[in-house]
Length: 244
Ligand SMILES: Nc1ncnc2c1ncn2[C@@H]1O[C@H](COP(=O)(O)OP(=O)(O)O)[C@@H](O)[C@H]1O
Ligand SMILES: [Mg+2]
Image (cartoon, rainbow, N blue to C red; front, top):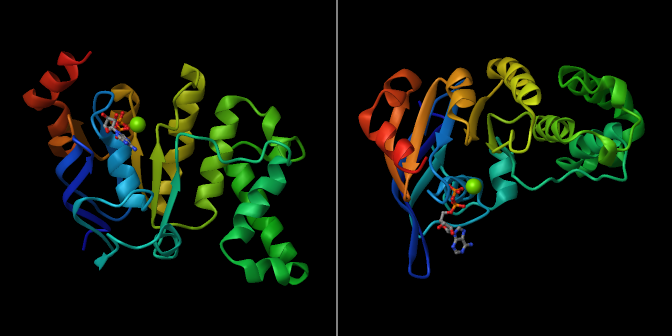
């Protein structure tokens, strides 16, 4: 059974159809890339999947369950976690505390019984910080991390919920080529734990890490399938080259 199933998804803003009859599938432990020119509806599709926007038509299923109208917290409990383009870290708190808060946020009871679970939480925080190369920055204020490190901290925070599906909207925007490469290396190992739906501008970056791709152009899915098939699809080349 597929993990995420999007069918006939449409989003209309006034007179603008931002998304038209979009269809795509993500299976378990799969990295799926969402690409397309500026304004083609990538963020709109991600927001409709995450519940930040409600679609005008169509359905979203997660693990076979219809979540089209579910609230973001309900989606989070159903196994979805996301990081949008806008940063959600608290710059005045330490790197460690940002992650600790993220771990506690999805279970308020944890905060109440923190004294008993502090050891376990500490282990989880340090494990995530180590995985994302931030262990030696743990006491630093998050606002002083480099742009790339802030993105990694946010991805670690999103993963702290142990999602089945992680949604990332342009995580490498504004990163240096080195940070971009490092991001690919950091994301790789999470495939053992969850699936990834990632919006990206950089086709070279995304085709290296994704098993499959969905290409949007003017709100419509131009192609969706295995990365090799999609990138060789003449309609994709056309959509990409036409818009530069
Ligand atoms: N809240 C909104 N209200 C009106 N129009 C919107 C809104 N959000 C996005 N759009 C429009 O929908 C289209 C798709 O936008 P978006 O999904 O952000 O594209 P992408 O992420 O591919 O660059 C654009 O024309 C954009 O201007
Ligand atoms: Mg966008």
